Length: 309
Image (cartoon, rainbow, N blue to C red; front, side):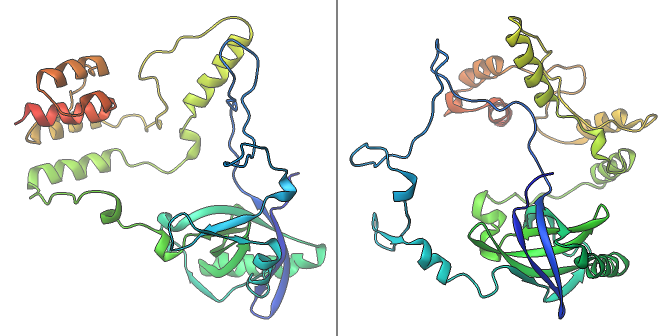
C-alpha cells in the first residue's frame, strides 16, 4: 500500500465525502544514475549559493519569484504562501457535471485514484460513483495539490473514482504558438479514399496489453547482462508496436497509397531504411545547411526536400 498524496473532503452538493488521493501511475524499469567514468563514484547535486559556492542547509532555503525587472526576485516565506492559499484548500467542491469525453486529452495533467477516507465515507462515495457511471458524466472542481491550484475532473474509472488535474486555459498552447503553419493542400479523391480504407482495415479495439515497453525490457536485460560481465545485442528497428488482428490485408493498401502520393516519399517495404551516415553523405552532396546538427528523421526530411528541388 502506498501513501496518499492528498487527504481532504470531496463535496458532492452539500454531502461531504472524506477522501484520499493516490497516484494512479508509476514509472517502471531501471533508474540510471550518474558516475564519474572509470570510478564507482556517484555524481550528486547539492544546493549551493551561486555567489559563494557554499552548500546551503535545507532549513535556510526559501523560495522566490522573478519580478518584471530582469534579474530581480522577491523572496516568499512559507507562512506568506500559506496565507494566500484558497479558502478550504483541503476541499474539492464539485461545481458542475460535464458529459463523458467533454474534456480532451490535451487538458489532462495527472490522474489519481480517489479512495474513501473512513468507512463512514463509503456510502456517499459509492452514491457519487454510481450516479456518474450511470449518467456518463464527470464532476468538475478545483484542488490545491503540491502548492498549486488546478482544475480537476472527477470520473468513474476501474470501479473507483478518479481525480485528474487539468491545465489552465492559458497553459495549453495552440499549434501556432509552437510550430509553423501546416500548408493547405488539395486532397485528391483517390488518395482520400485509399487513406480512409487503410484506416478502416487497421481498425482495432484499444487494449494497452497490445503494447510492450521494448526499450525498458532491453534496458533491464542490458543491466542484468553487464552485472554478470556480459552484454546483449538487439537488431536495429526492433521496437514495440501494437499487434494487429490477423487477416487484415492493409500492406497492399499502404503500397497503393504510397504510390498515389506525389513528390519525394519514404522508402516502401523492402526498399530499406537509410542510416544516418548515409543520409549525412547525401545531405553533404546536396549541400543541406545545418546537416551536422540534425537527427536521422530531420536529415531524411531535409534530404527528401532538397532532392526534390
